[in-house]
Every structure is written in C-alpha cells, then in structure tokens.
Amino acid sequence: MANKAHTALDEMDDDGKFQRTDAGYHGTIEPGGRFEPEASRYHLYIALGCPWAAGTLAALKYKGLDGATIGYSIVHPTWRRTKPNDPDDQHTGWHFRSPGDDPVSNALGNGSFECDDALIPDTVNGAETIRDLYEMSNDKTGKYSTPVLWCKKEKTIVCNESLEILKIFDTAFNTTDLVEHPERKLFKDEEMKEAEALNEFIYPNVNNGVYRCGFAKSQKAYAEAHTQLFASLDRLETHLHVNRENLGKVFLTGNDFTWIDLRLYMTLVRFDPVYVTYFKTSGNRIRDYPCLLRFLRDCYSIPEVKATTNLKHIKMHYFSSHPTLNTYGIIPESNGPA
Image (cartoon, rainbow, N blue to C red; front, side):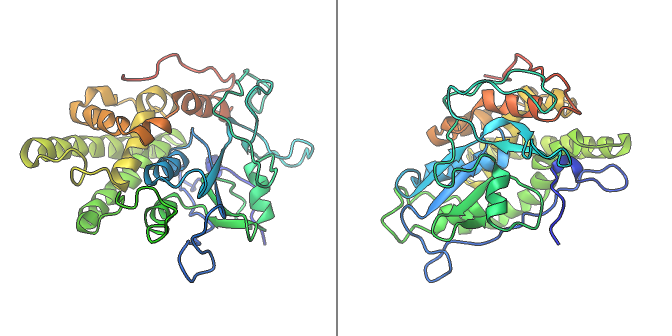
C-alpha cells in the first residue's frame, strides 16, 4: 500500500524528534546494468534551495556532465499545494514555473515570490510538480523530494538519494567520452576512510542536525540537536585549523575538493542567512568560526559551486514554504557573510 503524501515536517517520533526517512529509489548507472551510461538518456530535477539537490547539480557541473549528457530542471523555491483541486489532499511541495510567470504565494496565500530566470521548467515530461514525477514512477513512499535522477528511456526515477547520485556522477561516465572532467574525483579511495569517519558526525549532527533543530516539536529534542550541532561545529573548526596549519590541507581530507566538502559547504552556506533564525541554530554564526568561514569561501571559489549557490532561492524556499514556521512568508534581508 502506498504511504500518504507527506513532507519532512511530518517525520517525527513520539518525543518530537525529527527523523528523516530514507530515500525510496536506489538505482545506479553502470555499463551492463539496467541503466547504462548514455548521452541524453537522463535528466536531473533539483531545487536550488535544497542543500541535497543543489549539491548534485554542483557535482554534475563539476564533472562536466551537464548539457548534452544530462539535462536538468529547476523548480520554484516555494512549496505549493500539489493537488490544489482536491480538498482532501493538503500536501505541499515542489512545483515548476517558468521565468516571467506571475509571482506565487505560499500555501496560505501570503507573500509574493518571483518567478525568476533561474527557473527551468520540465521539458522532458511536462510535469507541473515533482509529485507528478513520483506518481509516473508508481511511487509508494509518499515523499516527493529532490533531487530526482530520471531515466527518459524507461520514464522512471533512477535514484533520489543525493549521496548515491554524487557517486553516480563521479564514476558512471568516466570510461566514456560523455564526461568533460573524468580526472576530477569527488570520491578518492585514499581519503575515503577519513571522509567516512568525518561523515559519521557531520551528517547526523550538522547536515541533518540543522533540520533536527528546526523541525523539533519538543524543547528536549531541540536542545539535544542544538548541543550536538555546535559540538560538531567546534570539532570541525579544530579539524580545519589543524589541517591547514599543521598538515597544509585546504579541505577536510586533503587539497582537492571532494564529496564531504561539498555536503558540508551546502549546509554552511545556508547557516547564517537561514538556519540561525529559521531553525533557531543560535549558538553561533559561521562568521564566528574563522576556519569554517575560510573553508566556506574556499568552496565558493570553485566556479561550479558558486554557480549552484543561489541565496535568493535558498532564502525564498525556507522562509516561504512552511507556513507553520513563518506564516506570512517574510524573508530576512541579510545574506550572511560575504
């Protein structure tokens, strides 16, 4: 039986703790497999506001797979009703608009949020929402998240797990002439042990930790997440200081930008402009951590990372998509540290 349509805001345990559910699609692209590496066969659907999705687009561009090999679409950052004509279905989620369309409001009708030039509608399936794509794939999970890696040949979702999509982009096309930068390695064998050890606390306490703070429905759940988040940021500040000063390393595991840097960056760049206020991650700002701030700037200096960092979409998404947290969709002015 299919699960009821829901969002991350519904993923709570009995103690008010946010518990993110696993992605529902775990296909891969590989020679000889169901999904072969082929030009123009795949399409990536992303939200620039979503850290997980924006990271996959950064990887797509970093590897030089965008364009003729894999196309992409970008949704509007504001969640809207996905079945507006069904009074019994109140689900809100990602929807497509075109540049220059009339501004949209939040699910309560508040605010006026521009349809800007960053939007790219779905020219592959003509979908109006990301939910449409899941329903084309006979989805049973009920959670219509981004990113979505789509197979145009089979008209189905290949994968919607962001880390797995990063791995696909990093390796699946390297033996073909379809990738511009096969020499760029996001997953380096010699650094994987250290990266995975870092990820054991970065993912639950930082990447997901900000959501555990922001979506908590009890003071106890929030306080626990907040404590773990800032203990982890302190730990990362020390790690980056030792890396640079003692070992001469710019990034988390070396001098080359890798997956663990990308995922941490996508959280940090949202921290001061969004999470400090919206998710109540108020212990410190990233600008208060010299090494984390320098790391943030080093990542941003990579052209493909900069190209997929859209603070307008980031702020618009969070502050306009959850009326229970921000009824009138008021968006703060500050963009965080320069």
